[in-house]
Amino acid sequence: MMEYLPAVEQEPKQAAKAAIIWLHGLGADGHDFASIAPELHIPDDLAVRFIFPHAPKMPVTINNGYVMPAWYDILEMSLERKVDVAQLEASSQAIADLIDREIARGIPSEKIILAGFSQGGAVAYQCGLSYAKPLAGILALSTYFATAETIETHAANDDIPVHIFHGTKDPVVPEFLGQQARDVLKHMGYKCTYRTYPMEHSVVMEEIEDIGKEIIALLS
Image 1 (cartoon, helix red, strand yellow):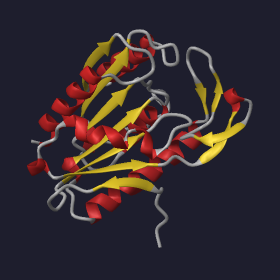
Image 2 (cartoon, helix red, strand yellow; image 1 turned 30 degrees about the vertical axis):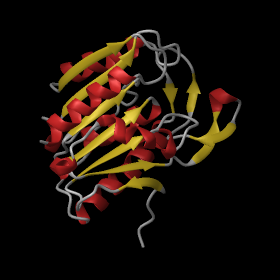
Image 3 (cartoon, rainbow, N blue to C red; image 1 turned 45 degrees about the horizontal axis):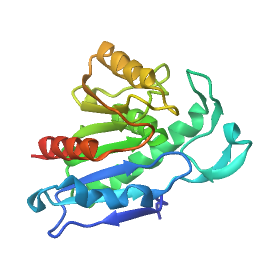
Image 4 (cartoon, one colour; image 1 turned 180 degrees about the horizontal axis):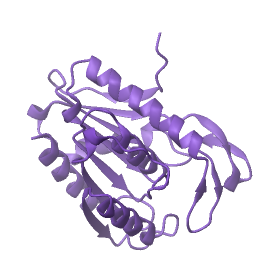
């Protein structure tokens, strides 16, 4: 039996035709964004299943080795973020397994969106750009492209839309890291949009409304 990450799952009113896998940030869990789904105002006829996986618990170096939910270890809080790439790649594979499961449940890969906040966004970049079947899109919230120099992208997602959302007052993941991700992705040939909000390391209602609109556009 395949072992999948535990997750909060929300089923649509009718049989699911699309799926969004949404990854939380460091120290949170799948419940962190579960309450956001109704606020996105996704039409019932898009029949979206929401999956909010829980990251495994591990010691985190920058937090004095304290064990907490994390997609990977952060080794130092330098501006460039020194991370454990092997752990990030392992988390990316665990998310790819969840995508595979959705496809096995009858959801076309082109109707699957990856969304991620902070650490979760770094995993969404790695997974979405390297996945071997075309996905609907990547929603990157207050995050950074941690594996820009190591990723092996897959041609299946050469045309994947990437939508980046960032706070201009973010003290945890400074905005220039979001800009850097955008610039690297554009240099690699990806289509990106980039939006900012006068917020810290969080989400705000205007952003949630924008994300909802992008989801509808990606799945319609």
